Image (cartoon, rainbow, N blue to C red; front, side, top):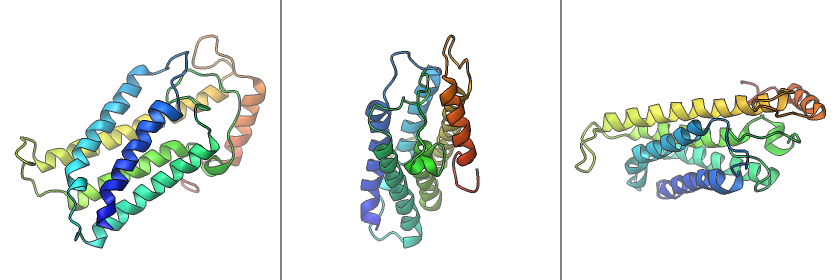
Length: 215
């Protein structure tokens, strides 16, 4: 199991690169929060760097308690994103924080379970990374001759992941406002009443943003 974790980690990172740069395009109208998407990219890179050594140099003989959880988180993240990608065709939806006027409601596949499965997929992978590093992190010595100690890397990772969760939440709130406001987050942006009504019905049908039965 340990031997596949570095591959799953790289696949998880590639999933996000693909999503941010290809599957979910930047709309011609731009972004509502351009600084937030730059921060999201920065925190993603810092989290990946903080976890890189611990994951990429994982011993093949690492105990199951340290390898099974992260493998399950990565596989669930990748599987959920693939499911999202089959329901939301490439370039059908905007990148996070896009300045858009919604025209239809996606309510099938993973969107029938939670309202923001894309962000859930990202979050699951980062939770797996954080849990793994917290369980198997270094003992406090500097890494490969660098001046940053292991506790500092762990602090960077945890802070980055928590920051990413906050940014995902901000994206989810913005998207819901864009559906619900008859005069949206952008000046002169109008949401057709039919789309607004459809989204209100969707929210009643799928009351959970993140986890079914929880939140």
